[in-house]
Length: 282
Image (cartoon, rainbow, N blue to C red):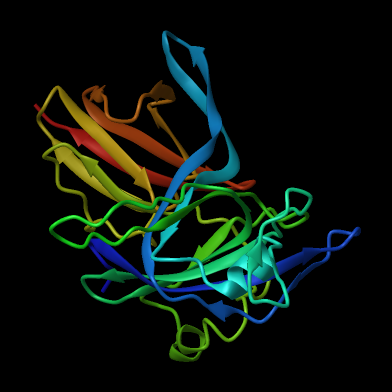
C-alpha cells in the first residue's frame, strides 16, 4: 500500500560526483553523515502558460531541478575536506581557503512514511556556503546547527534529477541503497500516470486506478467539476470535453446523451490518454 503521508529525515549519505568532458557520470563510494536535521527543496524552473479560447489552453513546464538547503548538527571532517575542499594541516587545524571550490555530490537519504520508509537520491548537487551559528549558553542548552545551501541540477545527457523507492521496490534494491549510488535500470520512461481522477459527485466505473484508462459515468447534473492530478509533479495535464478544452478543476457542462472527456498526461516526451464516457440523462 502506498504512503499517504511522509515525515522525518535520516540516513543521509554523500557520494562525490565526477562528470567527464564527454558527460560520463561517475560516483564515489557513499559516505554516511550523522546528524541530519532538515532538507528543503524548492522547484527551480518556470511554467509558461499559453492562452486560447479565454482559458489556459496549454502550459509548458521547464524542470531545472531544485534549490534549497541541508541542515546538519555539524558537518564532519570528511565533508569539509572532500566536498568543501578545506584542508587539515599538520597541527590538526581545519583551514578554509577562498581559492577552493566545493565538489558536486549525490545526496542519499531516507524519509519515513505511514506505511514504509522511502529512500531517495539527488543525483547532481552543488553545495555552497551557508549559515553557521554560535550562541552563548543560557539557562537551557540549545544545540547550534550548520546549514549549507544546495542547488540540484539535472544530470547531463540523461536529464535525471532525483529518484526514490516505492512500495513496489524490491528488497534487494532497497537494502543496498547506500552501497552505491542507484543508477536507473533499463530505458528510462517518464511517469505519465494519474494519481487521482474525479468528476464531482459522479461515480466512475470502474473505480479509478492509475493503470485503468477507460471509464464510464452517468449523471443528471447540468455540470460536474473535473479534477485530475498527475503522479509526477513535473507532468502536465490537459483536458478536452467533447473536443473543447477545459481547465483542470473547473466545471464541465454536459450535453444530453453521450459526452467524451479525454485527460492527457504529458511528461518527458511521453503521453497517456484517460477517457471518460459520460451519459447525461434527464
